[in-house]
Image 1 (cartoon, rainbow, N blue to C red):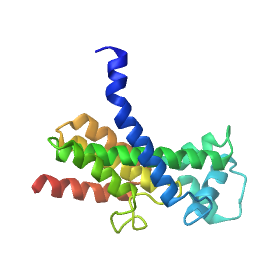
Image 2 (image 1 turned 30 degrees about the vertical axis):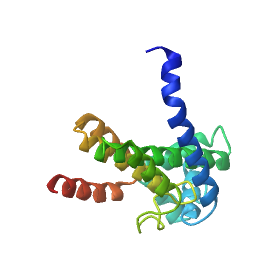
Image 3 (image 1 turned 90 degrees about the horizontal axis):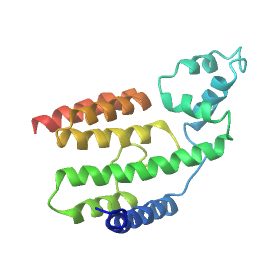
Length: 194
């Protein structure tokens, strides 16, 4: 298949995906310095300069926080300001999450391509689980939403009998949020039973 034919096959789905990401972004908005970010931004500051807040025991414990997400943010902030880094990560999480939902729906209903797009549209327009702020994606950058992206991709890989992909996505999700990894194991186990 030539490059132009491949692009032709990808143009419509890619355009739809971009439109759904844009719609989700507009409908949900984006915020910085909200919710748990007061703790997470403190962690980024301590990771970048360990001499900060030396007398604050809580701040010093943040260096041992288990999520690799904020370590990566701290490293990125040595080159770029914090706000653009968080905004970029939010957009990556949003796009990745919609893609993960698409892949999972494709895995569960391979014969019906429309179901995958309907699933993404439903997630885009605000319907979601009761956990995670009432939606799959909250309106700010943080590690939990990114972990859900990886766990959703892992579930799709597990359903498609791709153990290496499952292991990669599951491990990456645990790197982002180990507690959600424990939840995901229960869901995978229940999915295997039923």
